[in-house]
Length: 77
Image (cartoon, rainbow, N blue to C red; front, side):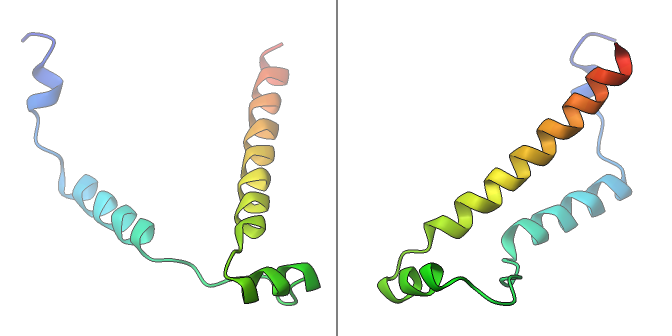
């Protein structure tokens, strides 16, 4: 078999189910989880722009990913 053999395999039923669930999760938007928004967020909501909440969420994700990478590097060293 050549190099392209791995691309000719059909996905298993489990893989199809996982991808279907992942697509559904990507399409569904999660409700806002903050119990008490800050006053500055409320002002932005009234104006129609709420970019600050999205940026803080991505910053938190990036921070968590950096922590994971740092742990892995520390374990190897």
